[in-house]
Amino acid sequence: MLARALRLGLVLLPMLAAGGATSGATSGATGGAAGGAASAAVTAPGPPVATPACPDAGEYAVSDESLPALAAALRSAAPVEILAIGSASTAAADGYPHHMLAALRAARPGIVFHLTVRGARGLLADETLALLQAALHERRAPLVLWQVGTVDAVRGVRPEAMADALEAGAAAVTRQGGDLVLIDPQYSRFLEANVDLDPYQQAIAAVAAQGGVVLFHRFALMRDWADAGTLDLERAAPKARAAVAARLADCVGTALARFVLSGAGGK
Picture 1 (cartoon, one colour):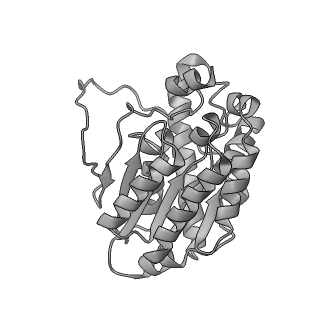
Picture 2: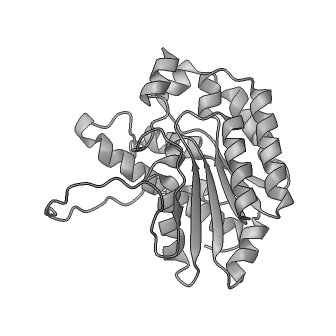
Picture 3: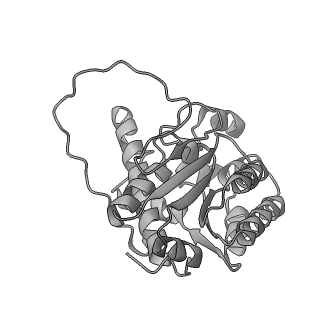
């Protein structure tokens, strides 16, 4: 049943992920995205709808560790390259990395940020490792975001195997002088009730304890929001789920932007 739920996207909560193909989008200074945008009919806009403010991310938006490569990139005159690697929630056309990019641009309007996203629904850690290595071969990135854990846990991959992949990726980022931010699974009551996540969370945390690697606690952040009833996708009314998913991607991305800027010594 878990495998079927994974195929249907019920476990991954894909945050409006579009399709299962590998994403190769790159957003530049103007915010454009390259690669395979689908056309759609244009309709007259409705009345403006106020977007609720994001709930407070608190300590989850503050990095305990420094991100020196990102800090140096922010001080330079060159565009800041950001690489995001992961599965469904990362590769979604309107996923959290794009909201993070918008928040970074708003916080640092004088800096040009370039975002490259590589990923697809249902990828294991070793599969995303290959994407990470290939992307770094093409271009150095002072900031690499790597979302991992859910698919490996659902499919019962040995936590040690996942950790090996993460350590190899961390070494690749470090060799290029970059900072690596690991992003743990999304929170889901269904996932928590049916999958033993603890060994995978522990493996991610162990790799994040290495030099040059930090951990963004997405799971705990989303769980706190859900427990408080401020942002809870699973308990949203069916007609509201698309809007709640979009808001969740926005709020996670905004918190992540604050997190990396705090690690770089800013706000």
